[in-house]
Amino acid sequence: MMRIKIAGGEVIPEIAIPPSATVRELKERIKEVLDVEVDRQTLQFCHLKLENHRSIESYGSAGSLSMLEMEVTPLPGQPKFRIAVKSAFKEDVFMVRETQKVADLESQISQSWGILPESLTLFRLSEKMEHYHPLSAYYVNQDSEVKVEIDIEPR
Image 1: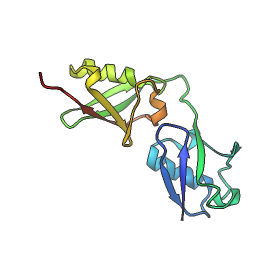
Image 2: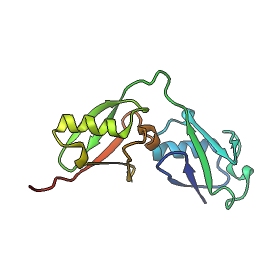
Image 3: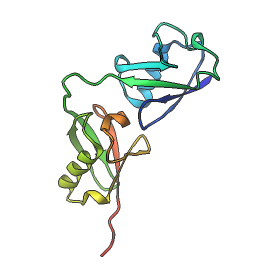
């Protein structure tokens, strides 16, 4: 078993997979972890695009393949899609675009829930989301879940 970090966004998961697995199998595993469709993933190692039918070990040793870059093809036409937003006290569904900034989602939540945006902290896959990044940097897509922590200071 080898462990490969998948870089390309703000969330960098580490995937365990046998070296004999194909690139397609690795992409399927990435889909399980990040919920990014296989056909939207392009994996690269040292600027070389990895081919789906080849084994991971055919690109080098486990040590040299510890980090791969992933590009995600944007959805055509920038459609809106549904995501789940959950806090300890509330759950809601919002329509967003993957090019939308985290700050825009915070504003939507703020308006809907009646909470100041400054008191919201958003997380995706346990990673704190920064205001200035697009949602796509956190692999937010259809039916993704975003966690919300609310910091309300007493008066």
